[in-house]
Image: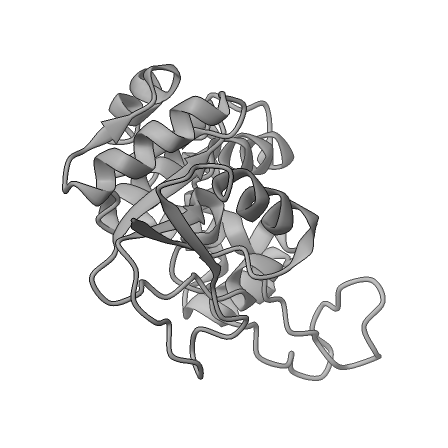
Length: 224
């Protein structure tokens, strides 16, 4: 029997994934703990996780603005609001003892695949693929081998070509969460001119039309 742990501890998708894997007679499938920080992740030969759950380092929160500083819409007078992307608050799944990591990924998101590769993933399966490919991937990873869904091969190659620097990604992530130039400068301890330069560089490198388009491209590729 191959012991498989599913990291999606909650939700309809996690339940469906567990039910699908349990149809394989040689799989023993369990659900991962809801809180990997405080609960023992257990033991398994394969951990099946979502590539999008393997998150980049959290973006710093924006400190309160000084009196008279610019305030985002909805914030109280004289007070800035903490801008922390939702993704930065979610914890990536803990890897069970002895497990090889297999990730489910969406095509055309090389940033998510890069994070999975950096996390040591052995298997890469397309979410839009067939159940047979998922089972093949689990068996390959359980045997210590690599498995790459053919439909993700080009995206995995592109995963090494992220055009933005870590600082540019941090600036874009904060901008995408609604922070203005002043707030980003406070959060990252930069001058406002430097922040504008990073934003301009991100727009140029992504081939975007403007800041909003650059944020859209970066999110779509899974870089932030």
